[in-house]
Length: 69
Image (tube, rainbow, N blue to C red; front, side):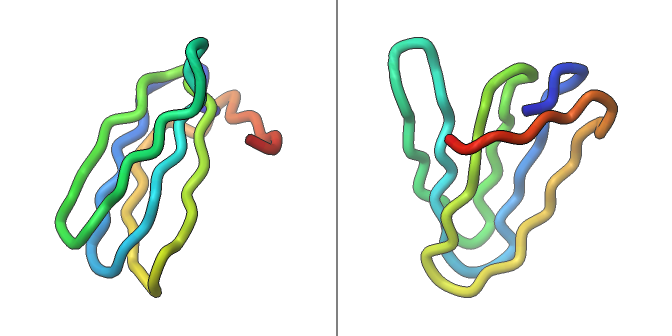
């Protein structure tokens, strides 16, 4: 979770699922080649690799926290 800024995730190749934890539950976003998603700051998230992939993550690292989702 990145409390200071949004994170941009771009799937360069392969397939993955982005899991986001909202107050109402977990949202799963299926990502394929070329897809991009903006994760709002403060939202807990994780990625599940479906097939070998390359991803680009852009965010401000300050204050980043980790925990199981």
